[in-house]
Image (cartoon, rainbow over all chains, first blue to last red):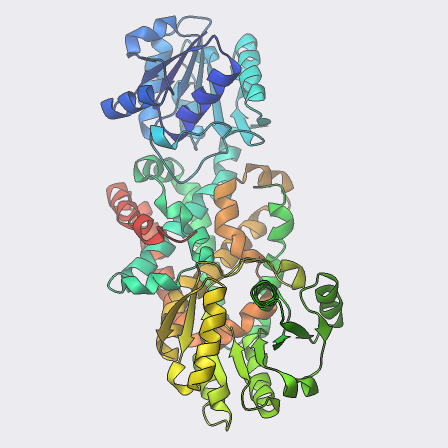
Length: 282
Length: 282
């Protein structure tokens, strides 16, 4: 099985490491715009061979794990080149625009739109991890538009990687993921910004920061190259979540200004309900 | 050594567990307003004996780990009862009001105001953990107002627990801790609130939540009884941080509305600087 990974970072790199473990006969070919990433991926044995777009005609599976804006141009180009039995998977954090971009492509049935909900705040080939997808959710969009045999092939891979599958419409995916993922990234980046602005001349102050601060700003380490186009593609939904978040913060501030601490207590107690929701998320 | 812990939860409970390990001869006496907590603390061997306020006259060390509003009344009462060689430590997240509350107490020199920067999002005796304070920072305020021998005793305990010591003025502590701790809690609670409001009728949606969401809302599990009085006591500083945070979020939203994604990229890149700051925080 010839597996090609385009973009060898956290997600693509981790995926082909698991594919190597589950398909010992698989040959992993890597394509990356950054030659250093390719060399590093070879050295780390994430890929077996460097490849180019013209080699894609020999591909059985192509995993496209690049920023979501570049995907819009690259996925049609990949579909142009691959043969009829090849499965092309994308793993981006937004699904509407990519489904729209390929909807009339003659090889639409070779494509499967997915979003594995897995990751860390790190990026590049050195961030690739074995077992990253175990017990994680993979959201598949417009499954009915993919050829049945290629759906089967994809499900076999995802199942071997330990993933749970959920099916959703792209618009619904993008709306909900704005709440449970995209907004978290903005809240974290802006928290980091607020503290850095205030405290950057007082490095000692960060001795006061504990694990709680580290946890809430962890996502502010994420890759801007990956996240800028996600916010751009999901602009409307993200702005909506951001407005609701800002409204809630303003209301909290008003309660403080009015010394209404019994209501603040109540708000926090209601939000403790998040404990039940988070059960099951590592 | 007779050690009394008033309020046997995450911080107080963890502290006396470590004291037991480092001072095998220490007898740990527990006082708690909640009789169930006392029973649980006995069963978990966090304390050796239940005690009452009148027993405090036999205390060598008293650790007061209760909500910061109740501290204001309890600490003077404890100081009224203890003998002249007894060390009384508080471990609250705010320091100005407590230092003010004891400043004219005849036993002021028996008191040491501290803030160990350690914790988890859990509470109650069952949240107590051995080794919680290892390599963590303990901020001590107004050290010069504590009797020299009692400073020494406290430092010996903190050193055995593995803590790094930092000395600060109470006002400075409260100002900076608003940024690196109190604001994180509000950002997390309001993130949890925003998502729950939107998604509570769609439980399945939380299948879409990954480790990033879990990390940013972790602090929203924290105890409202502990946190409400912290926000109340540190009201001015917290409101200031909240205003700056809201301004940054609004500015981010404006950049999105104006499609200025190159500036958004730049903002995130600048904030990635948090990586350096977080080095060294587990």
